[in-house]
Amino acid sequence: MANNEELFKKIISHAKEYGYIFPSSEIYDGLSAVYDYGQYGVELKNNIKNYWWKSMVQMNENIVGIDTAIFMHPTIWKASGHVDAFNDPLIDNKDSKKRYRADVLIEDHIAKIEDKILKEIRKASERFGKDFDEEKFRATHPRVLENTEKIASIQKRFNEALNQNDLGEVKKLIEDLGIVCPVSGTKNWTDVRQFNLMFSTQMGSVSEDSGTLFLRPETAQGIFVNFLNVQKTGRMKIPFGIAQIGKAFRNEIVARQFIFRMREFEQMEMQFFVPPGEELTWFEYWKEQRMKWHLSLGISASKYRWHPHEKLAHYANAAVDIEFEFPFGFKELEGIHSRTDFDLSSHEKFSGKKLRYFDAESNESYVPYVVETSIGVDRTFLAVFSNAYTEEILADGSERTVLRLPAVLAPIKVAVLPLVKKDGMPEKARLIIDELKNDFLCQYDEKDAIGRRYRRQDAIGTPYCVTIDNETLENDTVTLRERDSMLQTRVSIENLRKEISEGLRPLRF
Ligand code: ATP
Image 1: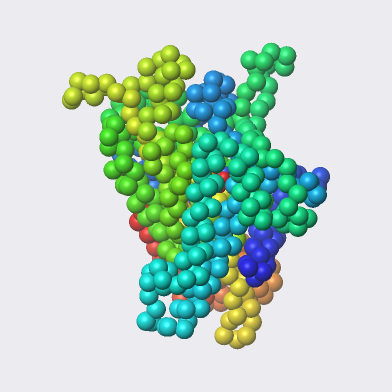
Image 2: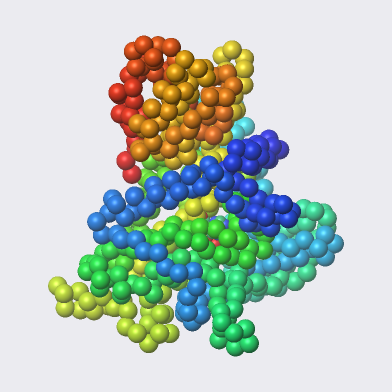
């Protein structure tokens, strides 16, 4: 654990040192859980968004994208349930004065028990080698069984308490489990209270109550309220989807873990409208599609796992998370939810407008059901970035830090480097950049020895370096160096664009 914490700190400082992520308002000592993206960060972020957008809107005939406003009519948040139910249970420690999410304290406690189980499994697997049968071990080992039962009973008690909105019972559970404040080490807790996560602001004159607006806590509602506009103007036939990327705001109680949990963040959401009764089939379909998308980035499958929801949100009849193994453990990266007809029906009720689909074949009109895929841009950024960060000892004993970013997402695709700053090499390098810059984001660098320049590009994750040397001037060939393997090949300038394009092509989603 200590090692992972160490690694996470290194990742955060690497992100800052190399222009990926800065704390917001840093010269004023920062603003909690708000971050700015730097010159490379914005490129990586845009590439993630484009990669998602392409997979949804370009690759699917029946999905279109929109971009709706952050400010929306306040009744929308009544209809969506956010005014009444978008709460987190919070609890304070009276000694440290620190505030926690009660559910997170309980989840962390469960994670510790899970760690114990995993330790037993690891030990046994080392002892038995290839004969080890994990399933059997889990089903028979007394300590593992005892801990598995412990987890199940905590989860059951917690879910029941939340379902009945029994906050006294949540507090009692925290006390019964002997959970202490990580800062003060005491069990001196306040009562558990519900806290609404929406930010509010004023529109127009401040005195009128009706001027209070919320900053949207999710982008999905902008899609629901435009369902008819898009369906009619796009002549969309069910099943069809509407995708959107945009900012969302949540007044998170415990905002830590860098860009994992922010108060201002971005979501990429797609709402897929289907006939009632077909939603669970489509739910399975989108589960599979979304996992394929993640794996198309070339990140190891072992970094992802499914987490079915124990407690379904008020609008869902099925829900699952895709969790990623961040440096601080497996946590939610994306949610796939079968939202039933909750949202459209509720907007019908609150707006008084019909939000139906007329099926010309069956001559029927109905409120469609919805399957949603919802993923955070910033969490995807953190997943990709933390997975890419690698410290290596090379064959000659030297060290290098390299960001093994999926090439398709890397900010700078090609660095063009004259070996020396004379003999016409810089001019040749500029000509090559002119050739390539229409297709790839290029960077020119002539400062320092070539080895140091390679290291700089490795640290920002540039997949290709093109080096101009004496031979280039003689026969129009350059050295093409690949970031991960560090292999160098001689390529003619004529073929450069093709070679690089091939290396940048993603796997198919
Ligand atoms: P969590 O349980 O971690 O708070 P959630 O279940 O509330 O997340 P959703 O409402 O399903 O999250 O939001 C969809 C996606 O939006 C999440 O999977 C995550 O990637 C992203 N997301 C949600 N809250 C935040 C946040 N505060 N900062 C960054 N990304 C977020």
